[in-house]
Image (tube, rainbow, N blue to C red; front, side, top):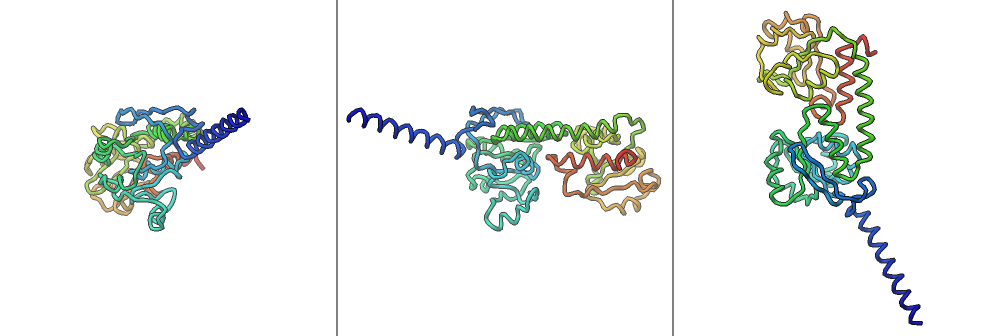
Length: 314
């Protein structure tokens, strides 16, 4: 009788342990099969090593491109806060109104109070001055923070890997990266033999006149699409230029992110530019795919390749 009681107690204890372990796993205190149940260490774009021991369940994104990365790798259900500028892949403004999503407000140099109010277990910030100050303050307060600052297409792919590992979606990120690389290869293989590459001027702003220099995301897309960025010799990634320099470089194609196309015909001296004379002016208005360094860069690359080389892309 006594032995029966002992075995009954042991059975109950084991059952409690197993149920507890299952609850722990499904409530995000284990990293799960995606990461072999071990802590994950990633190195962010600031060079900071960030170790994550449990799958984060309350993630706050501090940039639209980061929100897109999170949802692309399958971590959307773990996101509890976004910026007022996040609008893809869903209408997050509507979600906020309905109480389904929190907002931290401004994307550029956001205040930390709204972020803290969301009680995050992971904050993914945007570098390059966008949310560096907030990231630093949050780290000093003990929050887990990853900073992303992609400048090229390869950087975006690296960021996908970082986000996948950090959120418990390493397998999904790996599959997505493989798919994106295959689509990149399809484009680059098609344009590989082009010898007469078009000269391309990208206008980011009209006041002041601003373009894309070396090491910039949009400039990288132009290069991958087998175009020549006319300001690839600039000293910064986002150079402020002038009309005289654009006229002197005489681009074959002009790409504009915001400037209305009719204005190029009204600028003094610009009628002599090949792109203006031949009406090779294009407004890149496809829902921010050209200005956000996120997973939709591949759509931008494929579209840009058609613009630069219509003879190859029907």
